[in-house]
Image (cartoon, rainbow, N blue to C red; front, side, top):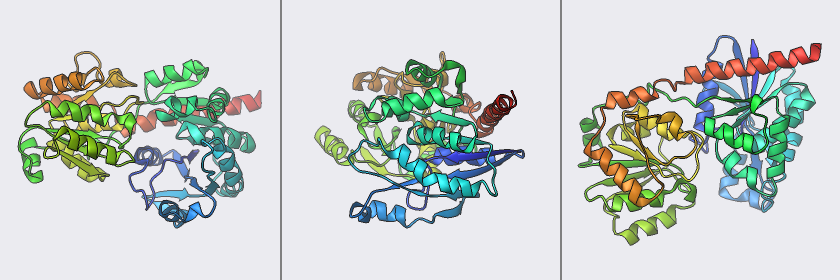
Length: 396
């Protein structure tokens, strides 16, 4: 039995049920394996008073310290989140908060390995915790943890040092693995394990029926991603503005919402664009089934879950050449098109897809290798490899 301690600051809770949902899906798939036991530690960063009284922090502070979450045992320890410090003290604060908790957990769950699900602050903290408890550590790189945090003054050195010290590293795409090597992380300790997709939830449906249920007539373009500049929603907005009759729905929430609303008004396309806000997965699957194209113009990605969820729904995607794009859309793939990251190129790719829509079953076939079962099998084998190597080193 392999006992895995999953450490993740990206994990859903009652106040944010869709936050880090991909980590929950992966963890549940691991826990479903007969020879695996899992415990989740999902630290919550809270600032000192009076900031801790702000609504967003009050909601976090009100969460239970320990709970069963969708069949998983989850601990939610609090750590000190000091504002205006660029996150530089987060990892050390997590180590201080988790050391007594993990000592307590070890009494009834003697974990063999720590799996950190984001490079910062999770991975940096995990390396120190692994040393303290004498277990190997695996750190997963997903996207902004490498592309953003690894270049910030207060956190860059911490991430690079953790990458060199960890027993193993996981990348969500080959491109991400290359980015990690470029930071000085050892290539021989990196494994690419792509994300999974729920092929039951995201499935083929009759598009005409799905559109009728949602009251849609004409082409529907869907974009899925947080409302932040990184996701490039303005590029898709400008592309759709040049496609008469096409509607654009954007699923996601974030601090850039007001700017996007102004941009929509300035382009005069408010009658063709909807900002949907955060959408539950079940509802997202319904909208994806109705969409003709899923277009996302991210500046950076690892290997986006939204890509796979769209393709699994039989909906082709239009994306830039970022992260694992060419792992998903290799060759002349029916799953979609890779376009230059500009409104003109996106408009051309969307128009071409609408004019010659690929067979939806062929689109879905592109996603079929990306299952959570496959993901958990690879991840289980990788973590067991690290544990076996750790035991051999101790015996030498």
